[in-house]
Image 1: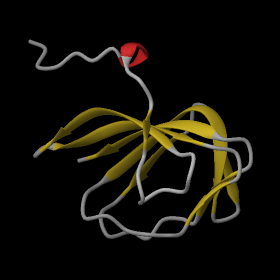
Image 2: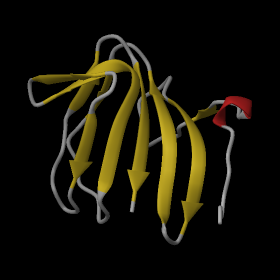
Image 3: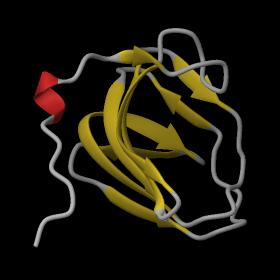
Length: 103
């Protein structure tokens, strides 16, 4: 049984808000007590400092690439980031679209 179906192609990009650099856009696919799932669209020249979360964070790069700790991650890369683990800073020279889940 499916609890939720979302066609992200029919959703409009929204401003990601003050927590992200100017030009960052977001599509929120899920946001409830069980977690949050978004597609984050980061612009060329994106940079955000290192930080932690209280939940597990997962990244899957759909388009483009970003760099973290001197390593470049590109389309098709998956990352699992454990709670309270500092990750970043993140930069992107090309821009990227990233599926991010917090659970």
